[in-house]
Length: 235
Image 1 (spheres, helix red, strand yellow):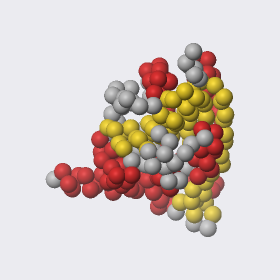
Image 2: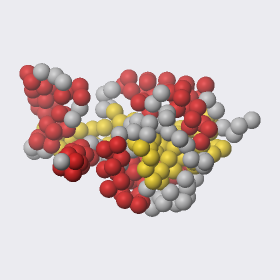
Image 3: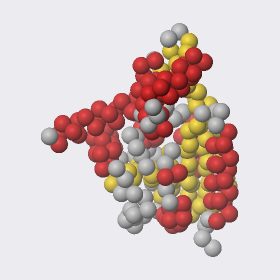
């Protein structure tokens, strides 16, 4: 029974991974350049999910990747997907028992907003190497201008209240192509959409599709925001 449930979850994770947008590889090139990363740099990814960002790091041949995932089922899926290529810790970041090591870069790809800011930033600061990099990624639709405002607030908070400096913000335009069937599946994976009444779902769907559908495909534009900061040397 457990194996059947596990296989069903794996299929759901595979479907989700297929339907959500990838991260442009340039995000990771820019991280490498900013942080002066080497292939054996000690990397920590917080909230790895299905492994979208992890896959990019492996494609770039990094060989010291450590991932924290609080959900057991997702961590199990990651372990099967990447096998011995990464180290996986099953824990919330706030409660994680940190190994006796420091990291060159800590990456949060669409996960920073779920962390307890005070606990997590103090912990991040303590386990990053001197002048190590904190890289935060958010995905937003271009029309959501408030996202930039919220991220600017996060940046100011980190700079003013923690020992981070040399801030860089980069914006990337990206898109993903869906069939109508795929886009319906994608919408149903979004909590805000899933909980709506059926009538409201249809109104939203057709309003979106009528505006963007062309040749039976749906093109969704995304804006990805990368915030890079360095850990100031303890004085």
